[in-house]
Length: 404
Ligand SMILES: [Zn+2]
Image (cartoon, rainbow, N blue to C red):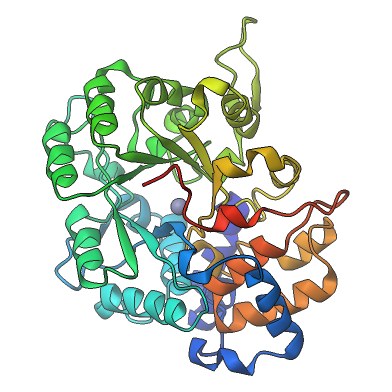
């Protein structure tokens, strides 16, 4: 979230619940009523499905959130509970994720996600993300800087309860003193994906002290899904940890890496530059540099989540659409509940930049009103390069053959 959105949300928080829902989860219709879509909106959904098998569709990036009410161990940390901006952000995500009552937050979040999935033609699995705590460099828990905590046990248990719907993505902060044991534990249970946000969890993925951790990941074929670029809710001193160039270490050790959002926002230090001081360039350019390196073919991937967010929209989307030869390296992720939060994506801005037509924006807004998860998928299937008309290839939205 950008500061501009945070300010809006603080306003919303102060103004009461109706305003929060206007900025946040603004869908007003039931997913079960999706049959009531207008013929134009229905035609757009059908077009978006025309060349994919809905059963093979995979969403590689779905957040689990909650309030800890199910005994899950979930908690929101001080960055989300002690400042007005943090509280605004938490309120926004709760609203987008369909949590109406904090006393029942875990259950309502899962029920809403399952409702959206079930009343959609998309039947493939969602990768649901755990989110580890922040640690000091000496391995001690740093609770004051933990934004939120989603335990591995929680996502694993949900994947066992709903095996057709959810694939567990664990999260282990590699600074933890028990990081290797934790990784072995989940690998033995068959988990094949691990997520982290290095700027928020405050470590550099390029730190060689993590070599044994990466080797164990590679040995078990565990894929790393990592936030790419700076992270709006992280401390400024840690923002550089999102630099895609740090990922050369895990890649060189044979770990498959998916860079979330294809690092499509923010500026990163070009650590390869010989000039001093080293220049800052778009993080996306560094991601593309890495993607273009044939050594990382089959190892490095990007997800296309958030590339349509107002804070990311522009050149990265154009570049990704304009390089179809790279589409086998891209996977679909919704970053749910992101697209359900009304102020995160502006269809009118997307239309203004020529990625969709005004008529498509209208149809997509209608879909959002019933089902924001289907909206995100249909939007990503509809966007086209403003000059060439190139679209994302259908393969992006299905199981990638090079990933487990
Ligand atoms: Zn995310």
